[in-house]
Length: 272
Length: 293
Image (cartoon, rainbow over all chains, first blue to last red):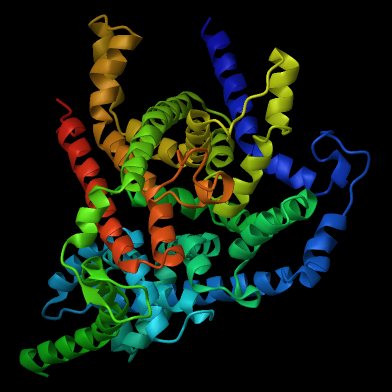
């Protein structure tokens, strides 16, 4: 009897897993189907790359430069991710390993900052970007993301478990703080760096509302916004839209699959 | 080197690193924070000089039909979303504790939804749920009906709740799972000796001891509700009959389409307050001290 229930549980879990991945499978398969078969056949008569060549080449003449948008997205996400990891690694070091007056207050302030939801800042931040003359530039998406209170918090917490003796030993050998952070602290906090980097990358790659607000020029849009605008204007081009969705989704899923170990760690870490 | 100079050097070093952060935060967090409140009490259209109008925006907000529509929509959405996401992620977490094999596979299958792109998955679901989409094909061949997923008001809210549930079950389920595995096994064994059945064990042991994780999931789910933008913006545009119009869409359209940033700022403050209020209320009602005795 127990065996039967176990088997049933496995069957249900497998079915549910398939159901959960199904939207991905459907998107991926459909992006290779001939247009007339997307909604009619599960298994197409043949597979085709036409939607990909359309979205990457022909869409350019419809003022939707997808290759450009892809590079914009990569540039924006890489810059922000790199900046957040480096700045968080340095400031986290000051907050956990340098004994200065006001350290505690600063750390509390960072936690206080994390209480406020991002949407509160959208309108005034737009006014600021406008005053700085950054509207319609990639900087408008990059600059507000260069430092992250959450990233600093994560690094500070993770550094606390690095024994002070390591740092003292490195300093005995004549290492500077700069060297200690780059060659000792960051490598020892590899999993934190991965978690912060991964969530930052995914968050900025997927960001839709903010770039929608600050960027009007099709040549400067990240992929998310350009894809949405293509979908709105040319909704009948289902195949190319699905191909675009695959391109938009793939980096996020790949990063997730590569760093899945840290992802699971990150979830349990954020619970402590 | 004396203690004093060492201390001073630490102070200088600490503050010189922190200053970079403080300057950045002052510009990109502090300045907008102050301006949020200034704008909320101003009438402005980005171009002509700003006029100070005290609490006019707030007063106008509370007599605005759109605002009350959005409030009702948000709670209407939560009515579907919260029970659905809570029950399903709890079931998922409990199933995970029972299985020995393929555990990572199950986790990853559900978590991969969590890293779906907001724009891409909105597009995909709008196609899957379309009148001629695969889901309606299935219901038509099985029951002879097609369901207007996004064109009937309550169904549209339900559909968006289902999409977001799809996205978050893996994440919430994992939070609950890590709560479940910390419950000591001997508690269950002791209860079994006392003749407790599954049902009693669930209500008397599992649920009370899972309280911290449940509260965390609830808080996350509630906060998320107030930030919904991409799905209704791309799929329904706030319709049908404005039933999927959200706080974020109202902020967006007031600030950047009706060019009324003052009104949108007031709305952002009120939205944050309602969201905080809901979170605090939930904690008050549900949060319990957990003891293992």
